[in-house]
Image (cartoon, rainbow, N blue to C red; front, top):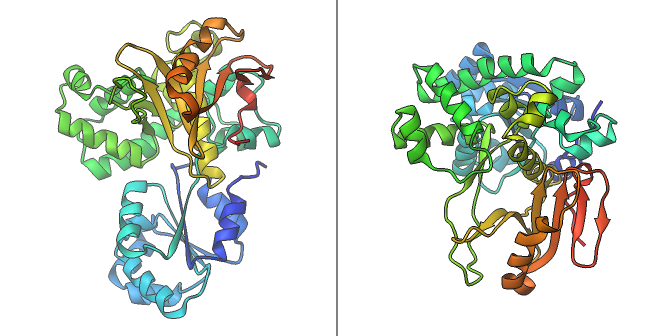
Length: 387
């Protein structure tokens, strides 16, 4: 069994807020986690048509039955319920009264913002991070395996072949959720769009270009991307906004929350194909940046993430806010360390001055080093912590 890092934060905030909400992609382990943490809480899924109809048609009666110590799963299915929950928690001021969970972040967050502001502690559970896998002795021995397999719990708990898992994930979850929210008639076209997004991992997002390739309008593509972000399929890494006396690019970069899904969409099914693929470096970069994002959420931290690139092509893959300064991080899939890999870090440090606290290279090798000017981290030793 893999112990989830987020448990400590959830337990702490159950004593401080009347409501705790947990979001994350489908199959990230939300239900398993919450049932295991709170065995004395009743569990009600609003995916169940009978439960949903009860909550929609008689919210007062529903909450008289489930008025405390209850886990309400997929609560975004009945957003009107949250106003009634607000009334209950305001009247009794009981901490840890309701646990809400959902897999569509946009709808859930919108409802929470409107109805439960100040009453709810928010958490995000993504698929396993490397530290969780390592603590359970499940972290693959080389990064190629991790890229291909991805990090969804079912792949480790039930030993499901990863190609089968991702084929079913696309058909069962992505297709259903997206078509419900967007009323897409041609899912084949949408799947083509997904593949084109996977082929643009680590690249600046150019929606006009995607529109030309798919024949889909720019506004429609923006709505598709928004839904995929809210469903925790992909995310955008914003460019760094501070000038450092250089003209900066303004477009975000595109990444997937899981490299196994991205690899599947790219038709990469084994290590040989991955090693020969033009996407190997981009997938490695995706894996590392997403690892930072996962650890940030799972440890309930509040670091901001950016990439930096100027108009002359100088670039650093990742900037992580570190108090009042930033850690600059370059990501390379090679298993050897080369002097040229530090060029972007040095350039940014020269113009950024004290704003750049540490220069870090994360690479595909196994040995971490601490040098005078740089820190070098093996891919498997990445941990989001600061000195």
